[in-house]
Image (cartoon, rainbow, N blue to C red):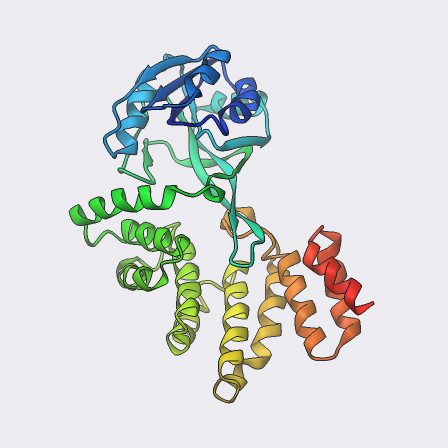
Length: 356
């Protein structure tokens, strides 16, 4: 039977490492942890799990660190995790069944938690390649990519990720990304990552120039990151109140992104705020608000689209409830609030109480 290793790079992970390892240890035969300069008790936690510990001098290059860590493993396949990722579902049998064929590398489903401007915690879903054979390696200084001749397939493992709630990553990643961009100024993927990092840091003005270059250079098909990049660009234009530019982009992308609930959710949000900003100028878009959120519900939740959890279900239903409530249609509002409430969405429960 082929052996599975857990391979991690860490630095000052005492907050999360124990929570990560207590579930991940059940998936693997051996644990390999490479430390890049911890000053807390990270290594003491790793020792509790009989991990093979190595040290790597940090050089602002995640791939270099990942590849060093992978070389420590003697296992046939390696599961690569970060310390702030926690197993939600899936087990060792799922991995063994996947690698038995040996025809694909495996992408885990990861739910990223982040805090919205109103303080609410939301989750976005991504698939990221993390189960790789011994000969695979990484490239890219940050947001590193697996290099392996095997194609990627979803692995039945789901993880929660809470790192974005605790800050610090944006500034660190941005420095490395900008170094990469100097070397590859026309790489649309790096431009996307710079723009999205600035957007997550709420530096919308600086993000705008990188989104514009990304949009100019990214191919219209064949890239998995394009959809997320375009949708995030729409939100960034909304923050900058560039309504006319946003409407042009929404129209340009309508055919390409019609199958994505997150696109229609962004459209509904954009229409709403634009109309509030200048009713007379944008009143023609009023019917598009309801149409957008209804389309979200038609599409539903599709994890493979790597969108925000709820945009194809309870968040769209809640926004429809708000739409009907402000239009005096209480019965319809309650219907959609109830739908969102049944999914456990607290704002919907609060709106129902006020109406009732």
